[in-house]
Image (tube, rainbow, N blue to C red):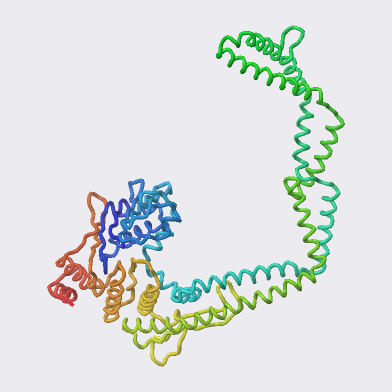
Length: 549
């Protein structure tokens, strides 16, 4: 769970330490006091986008530090080389130049890697989640999440990929006759052009190496002459080989008188033999060096042919020859396309049957799950003061798609006698908030995340419905840590921990503070929520009654 949040220089919060407990944590405060800033700070340590605009004016960076306790040993730690600790510390800094520095247990990680950890620690549910419920494109995902049918979907995905690959291959081969003839003519010309050149693998590299040698043959010859002369000696001086031979004989005469001299003699003898070998090789290389202007011209001509082919078919002779093989295969496929197509169609038919078998199994799984999901949501809605709502998952069968052969849409009727219609057309704001809460509560049963955050999900809810929402949130908090930003006294009164977000001005600057409230503080805050700026004995009494209840 999230135990501690330290915020520095984010918007109007200069510095704040916020402690959260297990159970139900509520955050209240005037509009604009900074409640959303706390949620933004939590989003930042979960690896979500952080903007430079969030940095407090006059400072160069913002930072958030979060301490999570009782963190399970997730595979994320080993996969990313981060030391596991049940008390995990996440620290993120955001700079004006756009740079982000993220650390988990002291180890640097990227924002994207941090996000993969964040989604396993906290789920944030905000008003935008209601909009996602309106979008029927998300309904199948909601159903699959509840079904926990990952293995079945993975099996289907593999079979659909095989179908899709065969379909694309058949589509590629189903070209019209004129296009087929044009392609065959192009391939034949390319094959003939490459084969005519009689290329050898690596030929271009060998020719370029030989050309370099021939172009510098005069320099090479002069260098070898100098080397041979200095090794063998010339008219005016003895060479290195001759001098070493003299030194070797001199040491040989006296080596028997001392072990040190004997060792020295051996080293000089080794050097003498090595130099004699080198001298012999240098002379042979010099004598074998032949320079031919005709050969250089032939090499240049051959390389010119190769360079022209390089521009069309590949960077090296090996690449060009690989292209030649591919061109031959493609030409063969086109010339024998009818036979090949028949084989592909047979493979496709078999692959489609296998995919359909899995798709139908997936459909049955989804339909069975849809009944359970509908029943669970109706139970949740009844507890949220919507006992007369009808809810169902409507299926539309379709051809094989990446996610199966089904389209799913959530239908509901909010009033008795009204036909089931798409949810987006019948749900009011308050109803949608409760439906979203019901669905989140049901889906959370499959979710291993320990902390849930509800950011003003009570919009449009009031009266008895607000009380039911409050009771539901408290019920969820029995098994999860729940943080809730709210404007409703019914919800605030249910909290195990109550945090007040307040804004004040000092020396021309705006500051936000976060204060845990005791019983008296909670009474005053609830009275403010109930009665506005005017706190009276009546509102205080109402607040006390709510807390007692």
